[in-house]
Length: 169
Image (cartoon, rainbow, N blue to C red; front, side, top):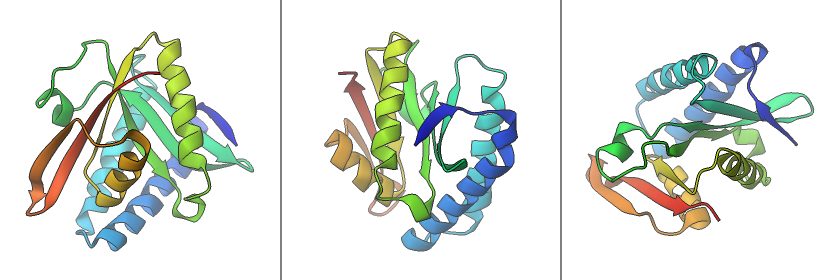
């Protein structure tokens, strides 16, 4: 596996990664298909912004010269900043996507280990992470434990939004 910052040549392949991941999520979690286009557009905006904004760090993981995962460090999003106290210079671990064909093969653990190295390189002592999809919430609960905050019924009855604040160790 190879972890690196994104490059302009990655845009088409990243767009496909996002579409594949979100289509899989929407089908598994029985969400509206409109969510795919909205979320892909949001992610592509973040990718484009990362080329212009030095405070936004976007990375990919490759296997055999193909992008199989993405992860980013961004400024904490409104879900986080409107609900918990954040460090002004802090980062959110965001845009974590692994192609459905490559899930459960250690890529998520690999990317998370690498992004924590990046956080340390940037002088960070804590980070933030949030999740709205139930499968993402299950994964992050296994990795990070119980969330720091649960926004109950945020997405509808029984559909919560979870936020983690963690020390970098």
